[in-house]
Length: 222
Image (cartoon, rainbow, N blue to C red; front, side, top):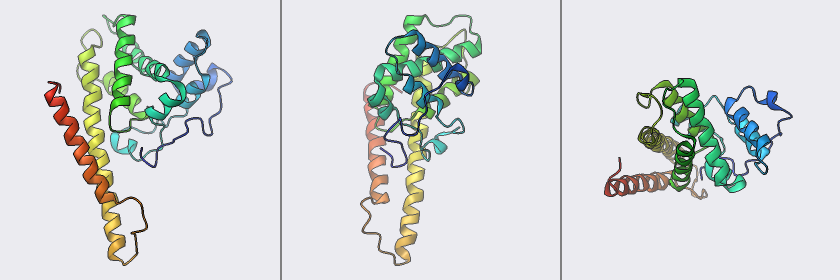
């Protein structure tokens, strides 16, 4: 996990007193309604989602953020709750586009579950802001033209393309850290006390990215 990511999702979180407290986050409002109607759905998860920084608009900003990771979110509230977050985003995309052929509820729920599992299985640390970014791109048409409604291939393609973009952003971030590391070393400051060598992290990330692409190629997936 990136050192900038929150490891405890509930840190500093205040539960909403009502739906009006969530006007700044429509997805959280939708999940609030779901939590009210569904026994056992964690209201704290709704509060965590509402606290996500909406100013994060790109993969580059995401890797430098402190947004809660999907892995820590799922650990605290369950994979079902993470799937509900993905489902809320995708449903809102179709609402915004006013599609003529929306996915059937069961199909949409199954798709959200698959995407949530894919994010948890990925070597990169996805965060809650990343899900919103992908949803925004789907709504804006940046991930591909939506004809009639969302489709499983289109949604999956949007997540995979952003996944590659975030890997590039992570590499760029590590490169910047390596440059700073080298500058400090050149100035004669002993950095050997640090437990993390940014250059080793870059090599590790590049190997992971290569292995990921090779695995997808062997599976016959983009």
